[in-house]
Amino acid sequence: MPYVFGGSGLVQDPYASAEFEQIQATLKAIQEQLNAVSKSNSAPTEAPDTTKPSPPGDPDNPDQTTPPAVIGQRWITGPWILGVDGSGIPSNIPYYSVVKPPSWDSDQHNFHCSGLDNAVLLEAYPNTTLTLTGIRISKRHRRILGIYNRGGGTLKIKNQATTESSSIYCFSWGTTGDVGEFIEIPSGIVVWLLYDPVVTRWKLFAIPSVGADNLPPSLTPSASTFPPNYDWFASRWYREVTTGAIGIGEQAPTPSGTLAATVGIEGNGIRTTTGAVIGNQAGVGTGTPATSIQPISGPDWTTIVATGASVADQRIWVVWSTIAPSNTDDLPGGGTAQHFGFRFSTPAGDSSWVGSSRDGTTQSVTAAVGASVTVNTTYKLRVRKVNSSLFFSVNDSAEIEKTTNLPAETTSLNWYCIITTTAAATKSIVWYRHHCRFLASEFAP
Image (cartoon, rainbow, N blue to C red; front, side, top):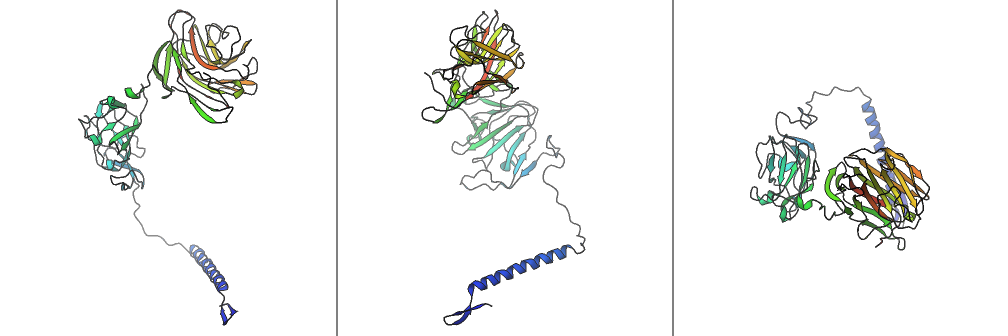
């Protein structure tokens, strides 16, 4: 053991002692590794037979696509903590499971089945159109539960059905005026629920959109006001020129023509229809107050629209312009107007969308952008400005560049999506939404 000379004679050196002990520990670890290598190189011994545990799940239905012969549970994973109980203590749920009760032939009230307390997904098998008014689960506080309709019938969830089920097991959404309404879950569709311990109700937070909008009346956008939600929105981000502040603008469109809500592959849309009079128009456009952009800001604009049952005898303008589109192929028929965007005009001989721009004196258009325009077809129209060029694309096609007759950099432009009938017949267009982003903007009154 190392020593040093101290005031009272020889004493142990604490630093050297610590270093010595560290060296001993290292040598011991090396020896243990050598022993392990030597042992692994020795002849292996045959292990005794052991019973291999059966994997969890449903061995008769490994892909879990059809109900097994025996109804029961199957495990997803675990362990998990799922919600808290009434005291605020995490529930003792060791796994997430999928529960598959026997098929239903009648309405279900205060529904409960074995394993439901520990389930994250309830697979229901309604044999016909049935109503579910409440779900009874003991561990329901701040609980998430999915309902998957795997049966042949439609499952209807009833709102605030307190006469059929206990109030603490009922569903709730919307306002008091929605009592007794239904959310339909067709076969193959999942609805997700969240239990709110404050109002002691199951709340729907993921509602499917199939066939129709499937929304209760109080959640359905009003065709008279067109609020900027449920895909009926006009949004953009910008950097204010003077302050540099970042902001987001959302604006409800101003519609014209005969209006109707519609649902397509892009969600909820606005179908606008002209009258059966030559020159009659319909569409959507800049609201009040008007929102304007300037080309100097480098706008990148995407619009989702769909054609109607006919693409003959019509003019469609989807543009940013100083003036609303009129019944002309040269928007707006002379003068000092300026614009950039898309045109489809059968009188002008357009078979596809074309990119158009006007500098206040002359309008010019590009060659065809994208495939031919056909009936009842959805189109993603995108135009972006980079330096002194406009780039047009349709449904993410190859971009066509345009460098001539661009509007002046500081011209304030407003947006429009307008269809005009050029025959004594009604024409329609569906507008889903648009989004414009750019570096700077103004909100013009």
